Length: 306
Length: 237
Figure 1 (cartoon, helix red, strand yellow):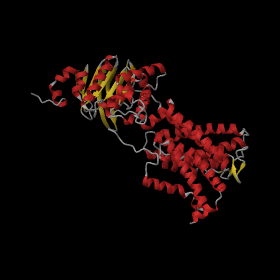
Figure 2 (spheres, chains in turn green, orange; figure 1 turned 90 degrees about the vertical axis):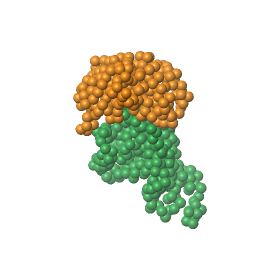
Figure 3 (cartoon, rainbow over the protein chains, first blue to last red; figure 1 turned 90 degrees about the horizontal axis):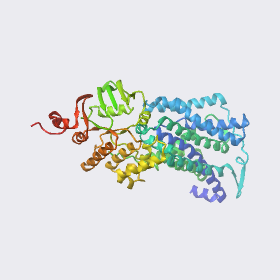
Figure 4 (cartoon, each protein chain N blue to C red; figure 1 turned 120 degrees about the vertical axis):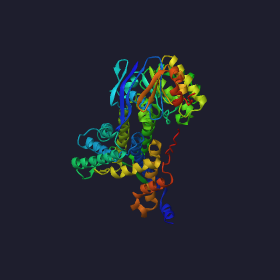
């Protein structure tokens, strides 16, 4: 009954606002989830540091604008490049030396990298929340049919779709993308083809981290309080998004991201009483998916042909 | 010419190859036969740089390959059609061929070679845009051979190309192997199907638990009584 009450009380404009919020949160989750799924696809490991890469990207953008007074658009470009490099460095130092080690060792190393980044940020930038700088126009509120919506909310889905199109083009229609797909299935034979798999893995980390940076910048504009632990919860949820969509599948990660983002916002909108359980939504979806479709919504069931 | 001398390869403490020497002269088909676990695949994998030798040397045209990784070995014109085909199931048939030419930059030459492979295996052209994982076993084997040919190898190593295939398809594969060889590519062939393999071989080696047990021309080994009994399934008279 409560739901009908909530819907009845909700104006069209109010609903539109929730929808916009949900879509922009879903887009951000999607951008970050892609990084998890790409790394998993190629190395069969969960890059637990990915959420913290998002956090670092927020700080890169923050300091670029506030401390170095670089124009915001140049800062954003610089942030994307620096974050891509950070991803590559983490792979080289934390994962590459363990290439031939058991999977669990790499996983532990990923958790270590995650803690290292969080504590490094805590030490260098202090744990005090900082305010992500206001970006002209993007941070401002736009009145739309009686409600105020932040301008960035309209850009987030567009930027996400553009990034996705670009990424899918790279993966499906370039030689590098072909090499990435080959390495993800059989790195030994990829080597026999003459593919330098270390380079391919570096490119994968660079792409995933660059997308995380794009997500992080928009995240900062949307939710301006940044702390060294801001990547933890989104990181966890985006990992879940990747699993829900079918880990290893880029489109699946995007789908999972949207399901979690929209679901989370709409549940709070329709069931205000449950708003305290907002973060639990992702985990409930995860449990349901693992019960009923463990390969994820778009995940492939691998059939071995002998 | 590929020369392997006193090659020792060990997995953990167990030696899979216990000092093997073979010669693969240019332009020939050299066959290795032997039972499961004799070390045939290990030998090919070590030449390809996928396993590290504990001892011994591998040289190709007087250059030592031991210290090179696979990528650089391919650059020298050596390639492998792996055991179990191992085509990339998530790539299309055409992409599988393209990836075989990964190190080449000559677009026109690549297009030409793709056409040549389609002439050799018309089935692959028909299935051009299909995901390679959906091909039948025989088609996958043809694709694996085609993919290897795409790097214009001087030496092509094939690991059990007849494994799990129907007799007619096996015949077809062996016919192709001979055609590839007649076109000037050296072939190092590992087979359990000793009968077929010995028939096409210029020279053959018999491997037994990591050692060369016997060597000779294909014909000599086909007529050897011991070989007949152990590998060709024919009783001594």
